Image 1 (cartoon, rainbow, N blue to C red):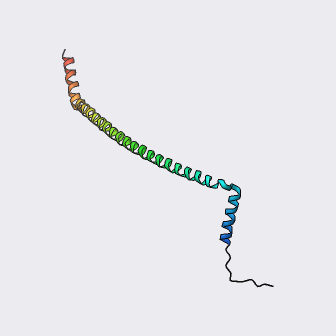
Image 2: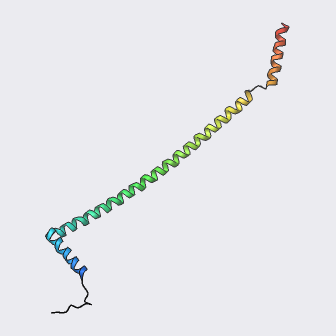
Length: 117
């Protein structure tokens, strides 16, 4: 009987990698290089399109931010105009408002004039 060496390293990873390569070659055969080339081309195309989309997203984001700033400025201007209009109307009402005492005096004078005639 032969003795087994206890401390002999087993190269299972190398064996499993070579088995996977063998299975891959059996399934795909010579076309594997063509598939790899096509996958590489697809990866490059996807990366290029991703970059284009990211650039487009950045452009749209910048345009939106400018539109929001413009809208914010427009809203602030309109609010200021409305505040000015409200203040003007308030001042006009204050000037037109008749004091109760003054109204009472006017009514007494009117009553006296009516009774005098």
